[in-house]
Amino acid sequence: MKVSIVGSGYVGLVSGACFAELGHRVVCVDLDAGRIAALRAGRPPIYEPGLDVLIRANAGLGRLSFDTSLEAAATADVVVIAVGTPAGPDGRPDLSQVFAAANALARAARGRLVLAIKSTVPVGTGDAVEREILSLAPQLALSVVSNPEFMREGQAISDFMQPDRIVVGAEDAVGCDMMRRLYAPLTNGGATLLAAPRRTSELIKYASNAFLATKLSFINEIADLCEAVGADVSLVGAGMGSDPRVGRAFLQAGPGYGGSCFPKDCQGLLATAGDHSVELAVVAAASAANDRRKAAMARRVIRAMGGFVQGKTVSVLGIAFKAGTDDIREAPAVRIINDLVSAGATVRAYDPQAATHARSALPGVDIRPSAINCCKGSDCIVVATEWREFAELAPAALANVVSNRLLVDLRNVVDHEALSRAGFVVHAVGRRPHYPSANLDHDPIGEKARRRDHSAASPGEAAHAPPSAAYAS
Ligand code: NAD
Image (cartoon, rainbow, N blue to C red; front, side, top):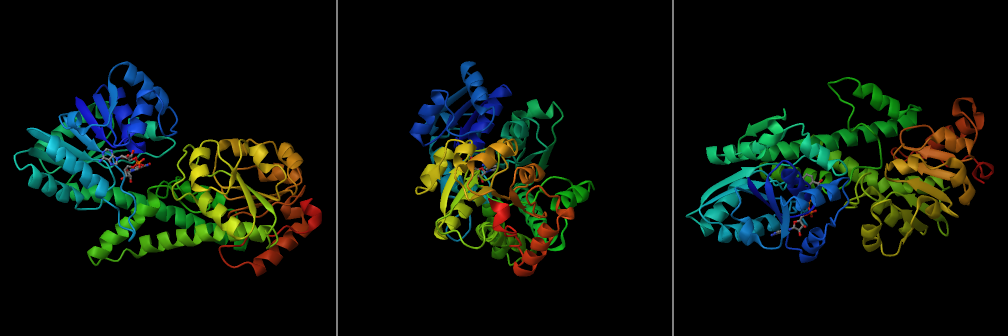
């Protein structure tokens, strides 16, 4: 089939490269001429594992091309819209890119247009796009289909090629049939295609993201309780997740969720519910809990540093909103860095992939080329993204370069016991702190400090100050 993808960002590029890999002839279109020129030269503008190889292989076979013009795109068997739908000022998704693309396609299309909306759009957008196109091109045989995307950045290619489900919301047989043909290489291999009415399909995407966001806010609140009662959230999450009714995914406590989807999709869903006078109290609470959590993380670091960061140096490891991507949109690390800078700290940061984006988003912050370089002379290390390389850092190497052996692990990824053996005080989310060369259960000084801090800290900020200067050399 001939397939056009309008919008060559994360979703558009991964989808385009994967559809080409499945044997379709694909053109990826974008307004951004620099982006298209880079893609033609074999350089993807985003970091996504395996994407560069997939793009080069399929471009080499002549199955994947890139263009800035919508003219040719409009004649494909299926045109996929994958433009951005960022949050607008009132929290509702800004649909201007979707309607601009639909408008241009209405003018360029001839005869038949099967338009699949892969961008995340509120319920009813398919109806509105259909009306808009038909008002401009009433002669078109038009099928507007909802086809939400569930890929996760960092594992987007495997998510696309081995999907849990493919959701298609078509209102007519031609649209439905074309989408079945588009995905036949996957469904023939056993993938499930769930056909639903268009509005239902649109809502499946929002409900899925809001549910996952709720799971994260839930485990983050349980992490706060774990700190207060001396339990371990990693084990609580594992114990809960062993029950298939609960599931293991999204039960890792952290600094709050970020990224380009969960925060905006929760707000978008709440706006839709508000428009229909429906109260979504659970989603509203999950969203508010996440905002509070992100705001609390810098205070947690400051408490661990004794309540005062003026003139001190903090090294933040990880800027991307999660491991495996260079995306820093709504990243908790960005909030933490800005809050620490506002509190008077000197902040340096390192990320294996997000340095370029970080330099433009955090102009005053010193972005370092490696984790060890970032930690040189540091008064406190903060692990803000769960990159595997942070788990593999040698504690002795870190101990040798820092000024003060203090680490706050907001992702529970580093080996706390190994670090404590190297002389570090380690604070974590939802777990007891570790003090130098001591198993806390047998460390009366550490236990004393833990109790003292629990009585002082407010809920959600139960980070523990180092027990004494002697431990923090
Ligand atoms: P993005 O911002 O990375 O990419 C959007 C691209 O569309 C940009 O390159 C932009 O230049 C281009 N564009 C805008 N208007 C255009 C037009 N009229 N013609 C051609 N190109 C145009 O966005 P993204 O992260 O890929 O997200 C796209 C959509 O998919 C959003 O609705 C998002 O919520 C949804 N989504 C994203 C993810 C994710 O992990 N990023 C996952 C699932 C769904």
